[in-house]
Length: 365
Image (tube, rainbow, N blue to C red; front, side, top):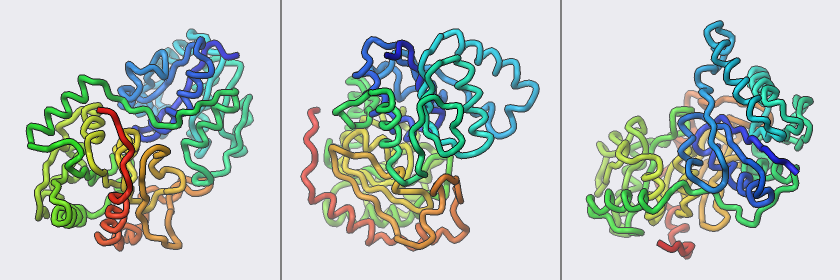
């Protein structure tokens, strides 16, 4: 029976959301254990003040990206952090990562070794000899990422009946989101949400802004509902607005992460690319249309066990080209990006209309 558990997920928003069913399994199976999670600073708000974990630790991973870890100036702060982890006396570590690149494996091994934990659980693709409990990694897309992480929890005997993603939202934050929507005359369940961005990790995942505008216009003609644009200021909402031919409300850059969750929770339907915002919409149990191009839909399609969702993509021989098998592949896709350039508004519109016909899952407001 583990007494002190550290879960490690040094990745982005959607990736952290995808480990939350596994964290719930650990929390419910080992309620007396200290359960901490180690994440990047920008994803820490996902798990702050929630019941899934006891403590959220942050590690400034971006300071040690690539070969920056070999700079002498990085050694002293890194050594201090290693000593900090060791002093917390974890007996069990769960590494929620694939062992994909040589440098990534070395960094993960060093971080895990610093804890001194006697039990280390992780995925093994042939490079996990340092793991004490191994779950076979059969490659990106062999199963969903959420399923891989649940497998790691099961390796410790942890299970749960609640497979939903954790929604980081409290009543105060929902009230702030409601007030922002009311300021623009938007009623709950009477608007669509579009996210034209894809985060900064890979811009190749983005669909054409003009097509988002055309889709919003088509939906307005059919349903008379406005579309709200969300994301950061770098997510090309301005380009969508330039092409607008229907009521569009630009909230990009105007919400905190948690207020964004409140906006998504009130939406009739979400449309966006493979991104953290898409996974947040899935956590909100909003019907989701996920547009996929270069990245692997078999791994990162929206996890929606209790609400409807659809992946829209072109079934090309070359797609997906990123994160296939055990390789990163072409993270930025090819120059032509045919998989997204040739994806029409009508194809996405048809998926939206199909999803709108499904009965929404009731959510108590």
